[in-house]
Length: 342
Image (tube, rainbow, N blue to C red; front, side):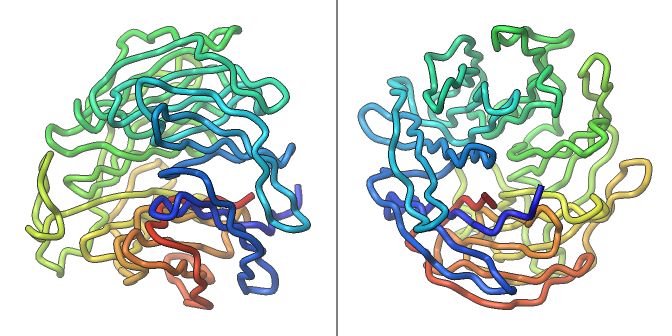
């Protein structure tokens, strides 16, 4: 597969998605697709040039969009209404024939079929407080739902009809009060890593590739210790009280580094990953766009694009191990909070 040359950025404040072309180390904004109220997450099917975007409103829903790689425009194809609350994270599974999603405000997660770009009615639903993210295993047999409100990761098998069947046990804990938020699985599928919002840690879970079960092994802080940040809590104002405010998590090249954002001090940093999967705290911190909720790393690991909720620009970096070189800042829109290569 060739390296994707498009970057999509959700601008929740404007209800839009910006489309950029990445070429020769520079971003060019091709188009801004509007009419996507409160869009703060989407999943991309690169093989079909389809984008599944979570939107707010009455009711909220999931909108399927077709990406035109010539113009960068996104054309709406279909919509699935979600009367119980909008999605905060979406992930495709089984080569784009299934979609997983979670609603933070609604406290529920779903699995749904996808056919020709049309998202069907959910076939399975789970409930935990403040669900913040979900990802499937690479083989599409298991799914992991992260509950910030309950300090846990819920683990399920996915059956042939995309139904969710709880594993035994159904959940694995995170440290109390840590606020687990976003997760990634490694390429070998034998480890899951979760970034916490309130304690700013990267949690390492060993994963049994046969049973799908997780076991918490170790953790490392991913926030800058020199900034005087303290542990946050549910309902607090991190900026006003100068509290830890972890956000997003992604692997760098060769999975030797796990990049994470912290929003109060607007930093990006890379925790190192050892051969046994254990994690160590970052040694360098890069100040990036203000309040960086979302970012993405190119599939070859060469570039990182970061967005800030309090910035109208995105930042493009060249990546060298755990270091970043700023190449460009490019205008995107208000409330930018989700980035994906396409």
